[in-house]
Amino acid sequence: MSIFGAFEEENRKKTQPLAARMRPRTLDEFVGQEEFLAPGRLLRRLLQADRLGSVIFFGPPGTGKTTLARILAVESNADFQQISAVAHGVKELREVLAHAEDNVAAAARKTLLFVDEIHRFNKAQQDVLLPQVEEGIVILVGATTENPFFTVNNALLSRSRVFAFQPLSIENIKTLLKRALADKERGLGRWSVQMDDDALEYLAQSADGDARRALGALEIGVLSSFANPLHFTKELAAESVQKRLLRHDRDGDAHYDIISALIKSIRGSDPDAAIYWLAKMLEGGDDTRFLARRLVILASEDVGNADPHALPLAVACAQACEIVGLPECQLNLAQTVVYLAAAPKSNAATEAICAARRDVQEGKLVPVPKHLRDAHYSQAQSLGHGIDYKYAHDYPDAIAPQDYLGVERRYYQPTDRGFEAEIADRLEYIRARLREH
Image 1: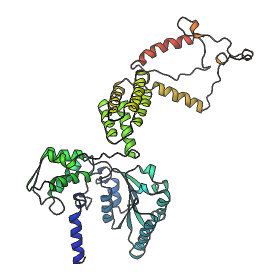
Image 2: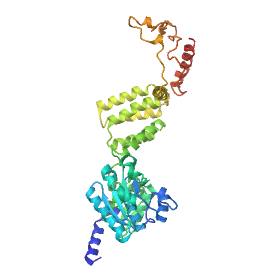
Image 3: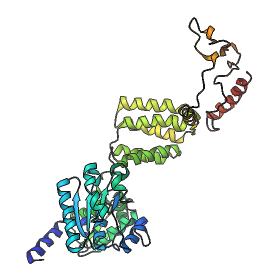
Image 4: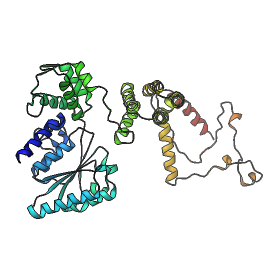
């Protein structure tokens, strides 16, 4: 590198944010994703065996997808090329692939092609990659925050391994923050920073598993204080973080993960967890009508007749959301979520309709018994319709002992939970009376 090139590189480093300067350069420096990167795990074994093929990195921002791609290029002795599916099209993609073919022909060296936000490429653009991926000319590393099984075409998926990145743990984040504070070359080691334990904990928790966010907040806190030495308190940490943006896209994969967590927390009778996931969806800007609809569904699907008040409450909540709107309707949603979570649970009605529809779909059909058929026209009796029908209100208990289906089938099996226990007792009596016919 020329003296001018070295000068430019030095200036570039000075303007880089802390997260970029502290980017790990080796596998030993890399923090997190132990599930597939720890010694003996799959990705580490593939590297050691020099059998790294094309991979898709799937996970939230700030978890190391780009960093690991760069490290893989070094470990594989491959030329690193990066394009963004947002900023580049087929023309640029073909140029990179042509360069990769030249690399193989001239130097027998592979190219690691990192495609950021690969889910933004349409099917035709993704198909352009297939020949070079299949022939091993490029090692494709695609990064996406969206579920690749929904956003990457099957042909490319079948030629790649998918690695799911998890949000970094609080301990992972603490490790990175301490490393940045100690590093005098790339980090903040030139400042004398006394970090309080609760401030470090606050920064790590507030990052929501995102290393960039944590390091960005640390850098803001140190550089904006104009103090050396600096006492880094929890109050300073809170000012540096301010109101963090939640990782939540109303149309993205995280949206469905969070609503799934909300529904499963209510179904599992944990009101505290349910309230948290509700809060996260509200802070993420979710449509209250969407939330209310899901609660109406859940009231029948998971609470059912164990608490018949659940459905009217959920419907009232949906109406309240329409009438009141945010921010006040959060109170209606919170009340309903807590009630549904604490209510006794039954999916007996859900199981009943699913079983009955399955019988219909599979052709296990039953004709309407003649005595139940419509008898309100002149020729009905000549066909035997309505003859011998027993009117329920003619009986003291309003139960007419007759056949209503024509075959012996049991779809509704009430539980012994909540009000459904009373239904079960009454149903035992009813079914015994019906059998008297």
